[in-house]
Length: 68
Figure 1 (cartoon, rainbow, N blue to C red):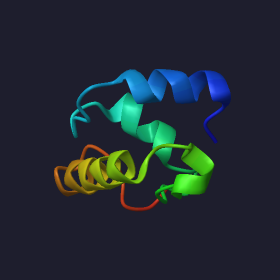
Figure 2: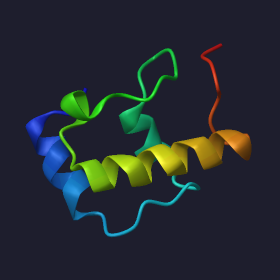
Figure 3: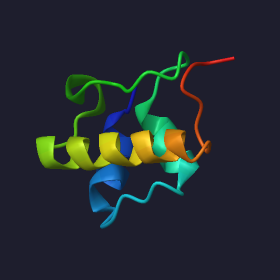
């Protein structure tokens, strides 16, 4: 779960990149599921961008579909 300090850092990123795996892991739980907007505290537009980036990185095998 993203804490208040992390939320400020999350909002300041200008572009969500599917190759930035460390950033995208902030938005997944230990079972590799995408966290909902309530838990992350980002805007709906940003959540859609993050979801798209996570799905792209999964397709490119940078992130797992399910946890090992």
